[in-house]
Length: 97
Image 1 (cartoon, rainbow, N blue to C red):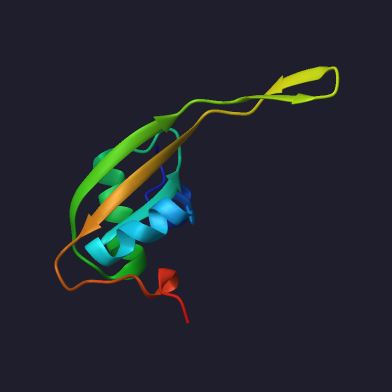
Image 2 (cartoon, rainbow, N blue to C red):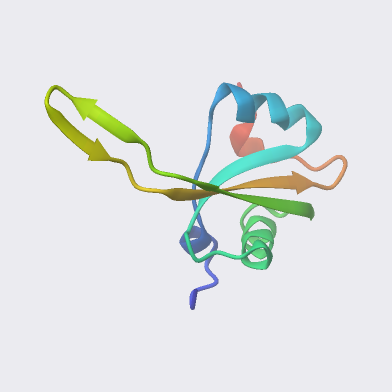
């Protein structure tokens, strides 16, 4: 991954019930670029949100088979990262109003 720009690494936040339940424990979930490494993800989060990252866990999500009538298709596989922040740090983007 040649570009170290945070938007090239962090594609979008993952907002689900499970990811929202992790936020009080200082964990945030992002959809990341397939070529992103843990170190690139850590640097991108720290640069984009001005926080200190203590851990990064990466999960490869397989594509799913979807059926519409007689047609069968497969969704793309993707990569997500669970980022743990230093005690007391928060990302305001995720906090509910």
